[in-house]
Image (cartoon, rainbow, N blue to C red; front, side):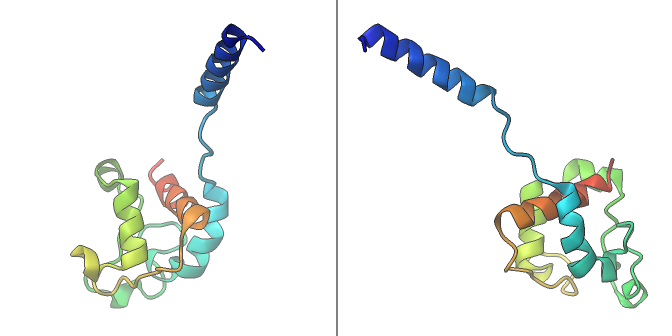
Length: 117
């Protein structure tokens, strides 16, 4: 293989790699985690109106709030989920779910984001 052929092959490989979209998080897969861990407080519709919400002070986050959705980052949502509310200056009633990682955490964040659409 000539040097020129090798260079062309590398350029094509890099272009193909850059053109391939990153694997998107799966909001539908995140729903199962949400229903298990989050819906009790945040409600199945994400409005912060779950069965235990009335006892919470401050109230559970309303994920349908478009202003909140626009200003918060995915990284912040992940930190609150994994570290809990108190560790992030939020409600101590929000427990940490440090066992969530990788795709499971990404999918949960995608599902939370789907409430703002």
